[in-house]
Image 1 (tube, rainbow, N blue to C red):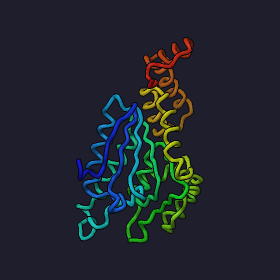
Image 2 (tube, rainbow, N blue to C red):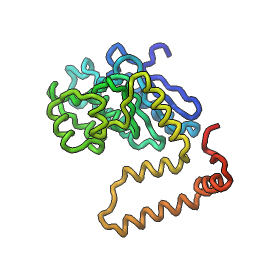
Image 3 (tube, one colour):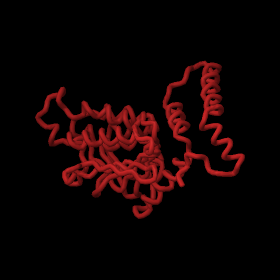
Length: 256
């Protein structure tokens, strides 16, 4: 569609979801939120999709909520009410999600980055939790951001709204990799190539394991992890992976 603000493409098991609203710095407008939700759902239910890449056109990854739409609107009708569901889609996706940033992220845009499993940014990309500077609170995005950030950095950056570069973002845990702008796509591919080597069911289970809170009792934790491990060792994927290792071949889930 010519007026589409989010594009969706699948190639060799990689679903690329591209924000394409450069006129407003890929702000999270009502249309963009709706299309992003639909494309994320499509990637989740498509068995052919192994990995999702969240990308963008233009010079900005995402500038956060569309403030023009937010002006003069009551609390109950604010677009931010739809945002938790989008962050949860990414956070709980059974497919690994990789963020590709060739430009800045602000506010809700940083929440999207934090929700992804892996984030790659150009060295000249910048980030900021700019909410307090316009009189609002980075509340919704804190759900995905705080588990990533060092506590001292979170206090500093949430309270000051100061912009910081990709090097700092990597140091505090917000992104995984910071590379020169002309190497971003190659770095994203490096990650997607590795992710497609993993079995789909094992990747989904590992992602859930990483996110679930653990009991305080060590014996209970070991019991739960033993059950999970044994189930996958004895399951179809585990048995196929073991057979492939012994037979010195690729497992059936690895793309040709």
